[in-house]
Length: 520
Image (cartoon, rainbow, N blue to C red):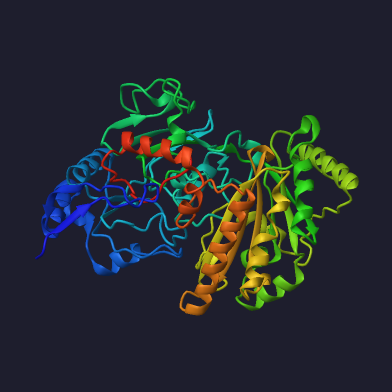
């Protein structure tokens, strides 16, 4: 067979005229597979076309590229050997920890190469009830960890309805917004310390987990993510889409599960009207946040989540629900009922001041309250994933903004969608305060039929044009997936130069997910 020459081509961050160094090795495909099989075992190297095709594309607009093979490491030592092997032959590695569906293009192998699938590294290494922490390998999913924590009286500060197959470690590494902003003190919370294999093949541990000795021999509590030294290595890895290093375990914070809960809803006609009430609910004197979980959904997304029989239930709910609904869950711990009564009193005081009407019954869908509270406690386990229920595929547009500027961006996606003939009533909306309300995650979900070329083309035009306009207006795309990378880095010359230098230090051969990088 004709040998394949692997080389690291232009990545998003590098100029088009960048000189690319060709690899010094020419490996035939069979030889490469045999070498990998020596590391992980032949049963853990997959070359079946159907499996490769599945990893060649996702629900994003990133150009499909078929990987050479899929490798399943089982432990840290195998990961180190694979990374060093990839360095020797300059073969791209694309780490994947979560099961399908994938939505953002970060698992598509831009340069081909090897998919490093961590689904067999799924040990829950430690649950520390006293310190409310848990250590997990990258293959541990929300569907596996949440039930285990429940046995210990703990819960995770989860994103909104992650799929059950979503890797816990990946979700927190990628800074997906958690539902409880009161417990988020930094943008990387609840991520703490971690062990990483850098692109050089070197092993490293961050924060108070650093130092000699195995995980079992470390006497430190490992909860401080800063360091070692003055460098915040965890921020280098956060949001990097696996392009600086491969994390083999991480410690994350858990929270005490409440003994009692009560859910409230606040209906609004416009998205703009939800911001000030959430600001006030998150900052109420010595009480702090009135609620644990707090967020806003538009009628489309809320109907998608709550619908039982599709499409009849969805259509009815989409019509009856308020255009926007703020959802807040009160939690009682010690003296649970008394605490909830105090929270209710604070809620009613703010409601009277700002002239809104909270209710324990979901306006437009009475009887669905218990279902929603149950859904918020666990990952999404039904098929298809909730973002894909409407039409089978979905384009996400999400960004961050300070509370004072959120309303400046809310009109962009609907206006661009209307311009291209897209039904704006079929676009999902989600607003999530983060970091105790110091910023907001704003998201629009554009469903489309993947088999309908015209509909896909319209969705892509809306995605591209709205994203460009949002960036121009000042929206912060802190996780630049896919096409966002060019939009962000072309405006960020100084930071881009620094990221290039860091990439050359921690992954000098550029073997880790080449073509995708994050803002540090």
